[in-house]
Image (cartoon, rainbow, N blue to C red; front, side, top):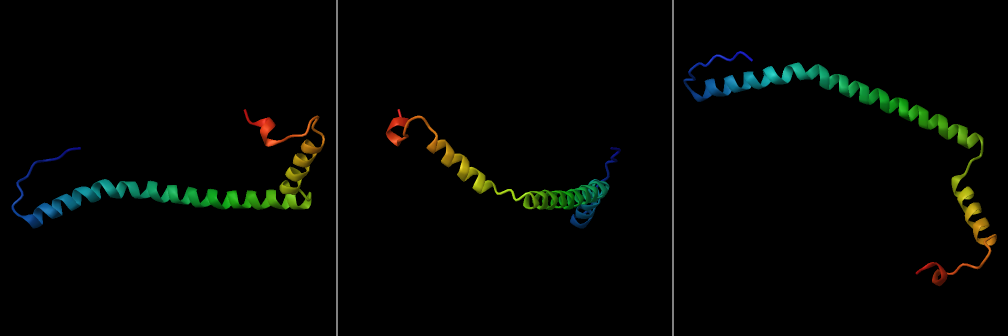
Length: 91
């Protein structure tokens, strides 16, 4: 950064100089910020489309994870070799 030292004569000139320096740093970052926002929005829509497609496929297959969990827990309890109680599990 090529900065030349100049004497500042008043508060208004100091504020203007610092504002110009801040904008010189901020303005080049605007395209990157806009690109980030655009990519974020596009990926959000793609994720929503993928989620709705997966949900439609699972609905069409009549997949219900709660029912599957209920059946697996019941079958584990029914087909276990010994009756389970909380006192036999805890140390």
